[in-house]
Image 1 (cartoon, rainbow, N blue to C red):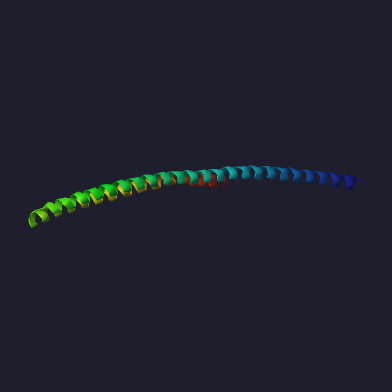
Image 2 (cartoon, rainbow, N blue to C red; image 1 turned 45 degrees about the vertical axis):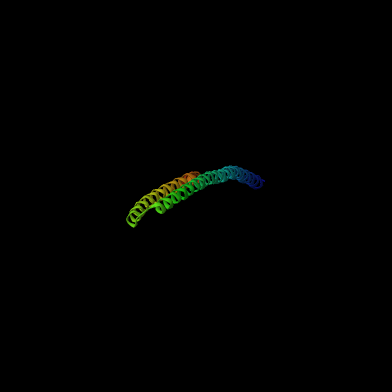
Length: 144
């Protein structure tokens, strides 16, 4: 009898311990799943925010390109009128050189302005995603 009682007590203790560890593992996995769910939701929100920033920036960029194109067309029209009004070949070449220099400087300035605007837009659009990547890296460091 003593052996049967001892076996029963050992079995009950082992079963209680297994049950306790299973419950603890379930609680940990439930907490991890909740954290993962929150993290995934944050990722989706970051992508949506990034898309909004990019769309707004591209819309502004399109508006600026349209305005610049209109201005360039008006400038070209005025330049052709000036060239048509020239009376001598020397004045024509002098005016042509001036127009070329001015238009070249304008093109370089516009290219620089456009490059800076695109870099700024790219940086702003990817900021929410970059924040999520930093958070993911931090989570991995803390769990490791």
